[in-house]
Length: 35
Image 1 (cartoon, helix red, strand yellow):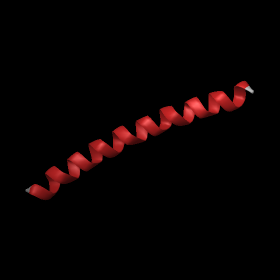
Image 2: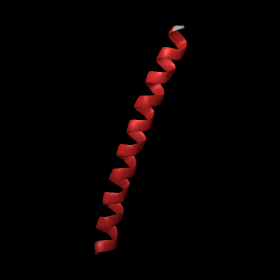
Image 3: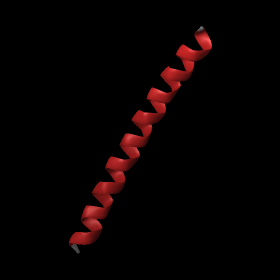
Image 4: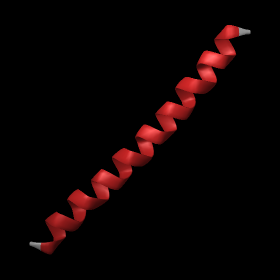
């Protein structure tokens, strides 16, 4: 079924975006604590 295929792809993209956001957050926190 097309819906599950699209859903799986969306979930994968979402998981990857979340990981990238977490990495960016960590960089920001490091910068804040360095000051």
